[in-house]
Figure 1 (cartoon, one colour):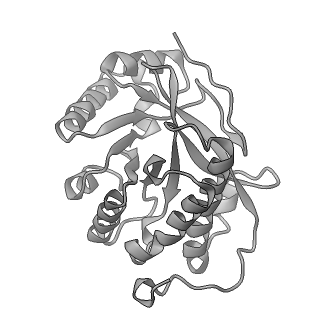
Figure 2: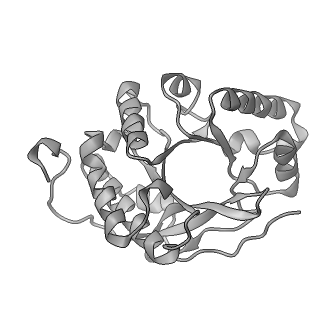
Length: 251
């Protein structure tokens, strides 16, 4: 690596003190009845949940874990759906673990080249369970990832810090609506109005919307009638560890 492209987070050292792998959860295109992409979700190699794995990540290991997750997701995708030409791979990342966008993405680029996975099929989605102290830094990450041809997404839009202030600062390619807005939407005029507002705003900004966390036919029907085309949730499939799950497409 060029010395100019290094940052203080790009260092070697001891491996992570725990093992992990990835489960894959489909995002479906309901109009085409096809898989739009698969989100890679952290799991333990002995069946641990994402929460159990993430609880072991401290500040010192955050960068190393973030990089290892990207590599693991890309390597598995290269084995599970390498020749699909359309299905995307969605990877969650921690904005506060990216020191220098151009430098910190190099491991992901090298992994994709190694397994022959087209980088234009990779989506990076981010959310913040902790406050973003520097939205300008996140804007630089998004700009760099877009420049390199990656798809960018705000996850859990409408929850916590992943809201309108972020969207005003930079515009990703995708918004994934938080499940707390979706839950109970069939019986909530307020939630339906909020979804309508998000869709109007997204269309004006040329942003695609994904409804995630769909569990019931009623939720799906209301959101489909609202104009959403991309969906993710247990109604269609459950995540499968190191394999692609079977999918149910609703009528």
